[in-house]
Length: 372
Image 1 (tube, helix red, strand yellow):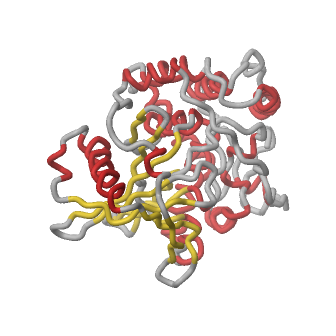
Image 2 (tube, one colour):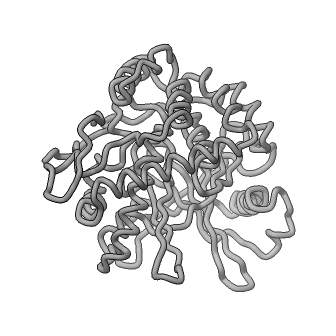
């Protein structure tokens, strides 16, 4: 049995600035605003206190406090920012809102702020995030918007990224507390992880361990439907190791892998992979040129060291048994070729979990010719 790597990513990623070319793309698709809060504004806090969860455990977030004069101005700007994010500047949606809390994440790479905003009429609340703008993250958000089943709301102001809160149960919490016991739900969950694994690898979205994606659960007329959504796009097309882009290789995700090995045979896995690739291909075709425009920009952008591109290019050529990646000089070109291969053929990007982790079992069919 092949063991997952303990440390797929060992170094923090540098922040890559938003290029003029990317900024033009964002302006074209109305992702740029000249109003709203700036990241630097929130760094003017005067004090902070640790934030604990309902069980009294440290969340590794700290609630930041501002002076009374600063607080009034900053809270007004945060309400405006929320109106821009959710209502495209319609300030009427913020009339009954107030800022309850601003938290700072002390362990994340870019030290993001999380804002809790509350409706004073019914105490309903929402969150949004204020982060340093990073090109990898922006490309990740755009690819998620185009290629995934979900739409993403965010915008850029200067060097600040404003990002919506993606609703769902954190996958690490779900794996610890909420894994289904019935076989029907286990099969559905394993199916969704298979499709999520395929989607991440095809678009080269890395670092999808259990702390970086959520489980969105919807009640269906037959039990439950599960969908997995990434919440951290920092490692979009940056690392050199191909396993970084495969959620199945993270030890934190092993409960999902083991359940998939119990519930799915290789034929099931191949079916779900082909389904997901067909869906991605269809989303590209109906993107009305948006995907092509994004690839034109991303292919010219430098969002990873050249040695990362060289090493990943070689691995992708070997993985797909092709030389189509050889001319690629940037991460964007690697993503473009990966999607072009998807559009041209229906074979899955990854062999079934069973072939990676266990020997053939009676009654199953293992694929012999797919490279791990």
